[in-house]
Image (cartoon, one colour):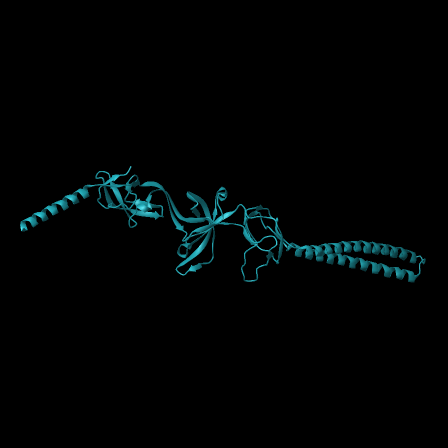
Length: 378
């Protein structure tokens, strides 16, 4: 019985060794990537998604309340500067403005009448002065003409003052009338309208936010606003180059420059304080394909090395090691190298690897360890 058990154990050991030998000898299939020359940037990236914004965007509201009488635009319409968007019911104010216009017209006519009469009395007084010097007019007659000329001159001045008062009154009524119309401060696209004809609009009370009557987005100027960690903010300066990527355009990278760094830190989360930066796109043609509100990621280029050895960062182990492919042994060997600049895409190689060396592309392959036998995937 004992002999049979021993024989069984010996057979089991041999089978285990044979299976292990077979398993070790079987190579695994992997993909490789070469060490090449190119550009490597030291970058600072946003901590949360940035946003495409318009340089000009106004959420417009009327300064007074009233009933909407006319709505001249719809969402998506393109409007010009100073175009009327909404008009409130304003017949009462139109009447006041018309009354002010009529009074100003009357005041102008009074100026003409009074000043013509003043000029006539002035000439008559001057003529009587000449006759008085020849003793042809009595002193009483001359004094009466002088008084009449002075009164006429005063009436002319009074009429001019009344005209100025009428003009000011008309301007006041015009300004009040203009408050019943909402106009576009710049050219752009209507993004949103809150209100319909017949509805009543109420202006926002102080300290209380209410939806705008019209949301107007300016035409032809966009920028990216993105938050960066407060630790990295000190490395960023205005004018630094930026690479912008968008989920809506995967694979494309847009060029930009840092145009603004916020002078304060946002404390949206106690453990994630950030500083907003604004990025202006360099190529204006890129603006035309972007929509307001697109999410965007920014990489601010702090330092750049061109035509340097590099390899994908995803191939690096512990910051300074790779699994190098040994062509002669068809094995992977753990190899240390001296890294330089690094970002999420590429890591610079200062020493330890040479141009053309091939390393394991993905570290997630089962069995891809130091000394593993491999075959190359086609």
